[in-house]
Length: 106
Image (cartoon, rainbow, N blue to C red; front, side, top):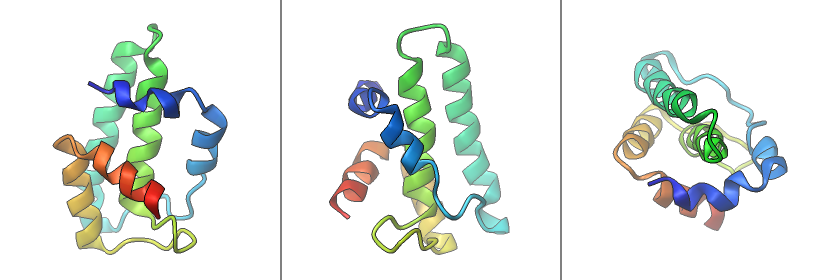
């Protein structure tokens, strides 16, 4: 369930600020998995676009990009390829909530 994303979905300005990360594209060797994660999020959003829960999936997209590509604490410094791939795999196996909690602690 993505209900834990509700507080994020209810703050679109905060999400918009997070969506302005410095690094937008992953390294070439990490693109397949990264874009697969974004495709998964886009599919969830498409399937729920006409429901009150659509904001949850917008939050999923923005937060998954933020926790996989950049370090928040270090001014948006990009992550290494291996770190990024590990984080993409965590998101795809249900670890987004843990990664977001770590991001908040940064």
